Image (cartoon, rainbow, N blue to C red; front, side, top):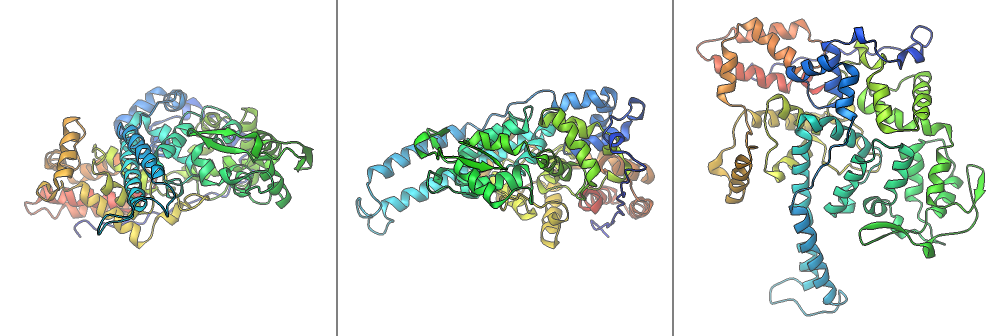
Length: 520
């Protein structure tokens, strides 16, 4: 039974009835007297990546509004790794060298046994891009892993799964970095303004082909996704609206790594969008979209899918939330406060009912086990990829489907392997000189704790079986624990034959691999 404790929790979802639980009551703030440690634990599990006892106690004492203010009251800047500037400099030098060679079919012949110079330079640029991107991901994970940054970066991930761009097409990590910083610095603003801002982001311009859209030959990609995925949802626009909006969106290009309006590429003619005619431009399109009733519903619906439940709420509840959000000028931070302070959010049926994404699972483990993000950026990225989520690289413009889609035999095996790695220190003798150097740098900076030590496990071995089971279950799990699972742990611990440390290790690993830990 070592390391294979299995428990499948039962989940209950309520059927909301406006007749017995009015939508206005659902989104009304939780009363101060109803705020308790279990509410604090639930809130932290959802808005951050874990809910350690010290964080729960601090949130309980701060109160609900104090905790939300701490989480969303200010923007915490993220500084990309220094290697990003080095990458840009080296890439620009290679691009200049490639340009000096002239057209691809011209230029000097390849050296004996080598590649054509153009092709070699392209490969060098690709390698630079890949390494800089991996280092950016590692730095971002380390930033998000710090509890004071977790709520903000979880929200950035939520926004990035709606306003999607993907590294696989954008390639340039400096553009990915700039785009995520745009989301990070915009969540205290109106979602309407955020939609206007992202269409001038070089990453978005490239991802949805705005740079190819000009008068006479408009590209419809951005116009369609702006309506279907970013703002309104399917069924709330016509094909003519898309075509006319695409004309209005012509003229946006990248110059000196900035999105700019090139008037000569813009279509100045009359366009009719949602029945309104005018010489509309790009920002007019967004303003017209937000005159539509569905603009108040689609983003809140996506927000709730990320933070509350994969099951859609009945329309009266969504409509009430959308109306309140609109009265708050569509501000993203105000939507967060409306949801996270509401009566509905703390209903027992919604607790422990969302499956953690691979990134949430990984960062939650790091926080719960008090471990650092691994400095081996390639291995970290591959681990997350094996679990089904490549950071900043969703599979398509719809983003990750999430929920049960995170779990299959392959991704679950990858999650189990990650837990095993976190309970076994890396074999330093088997590391390359480059990886040893990274580990040494991390340790010198105080960020090199990569596995649970025997000393830490020994601190648990003296606890009686019942107390140890309660400590582990109450410390790490989000939902209500089934008594049978607790009994399994206690029974297993009673197999002690002088191997108490190994039994504790087995139980801890099994808990982090269990279905209960995969939900929040």
